[in-house]
Length: 147
Image (tube, rainbow, N blue to C red; front, side, top):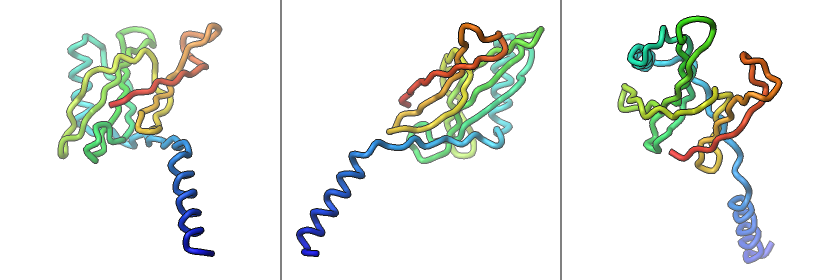
């Protein structure tokens, strides 16, 4: 192949890569939530008057672009009676070996999955559909966030 043709073919291949849509990168769910985060969430819940911290899920990803693995956390507290829970969602930013809680994200639904797509954090949230029982949303919706 003539060198000019090889260069043109390389340029076309590079342009195709740049123009191709980015694939969603799944964010892994944390296998373990650090004790300091759980303690902070417990204190937050007590301050809100919730009965107890029931469940914590987290996703490990760099939320602020500093190269450190932060946490996106979904926490459920018992509201005190029955099986109702109250959900809150927080970013926890890693600072050395510790985590600093960010502002409550005020999401109105639970998180099903988290991905990155073109520099945007994409949350798939559970969605109640008209015929769903109160316990069990069967739908979903997507929320795109930029940190």
